[in-house]
Image 1 (cartoon, helix red, strand yellow):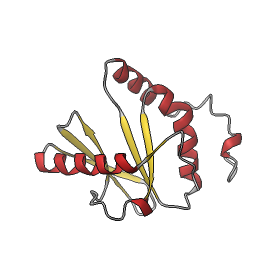
Image 2 (cartoon, one colour):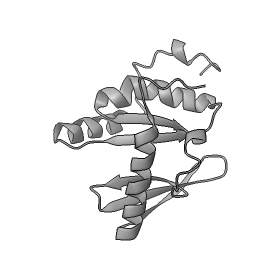
Image 3 (tube, helix red, strand yellow):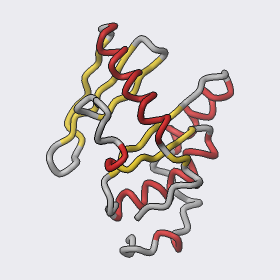
Image 4 (cartoon, helix red, strand yellow):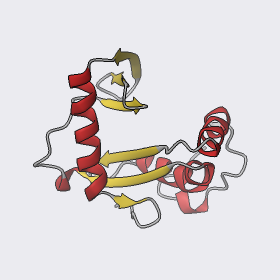
Length: 139
């Protein structure tokens, strides 16, 4: 059980929920693939975002992900897609759809060049303003 606001005390060495993901990332990075993740967050952050930050620092980054964080306050003038997304090899976008309470619903894929361009531009705009995982302080 997680205790509210005690994430610095968590011992996550046994965290296995993402072990397949971390293996996939390590293998991709070993092949020379850059895996970048930008997280856009509202502040004050929720306990779940604090947990994500802790797990990312202990597992995602050591696996090879490059992660940056940006407060929504710093993104007001950016045109962003309405859903979370991943872009693969500059040719495929995977959108994640969530319910109002954050539960995953389904995914949508697009190979439309316009949609890919929109997502790449939005990602780079966020990435250029965002703070590296090691420097970001969840507040």
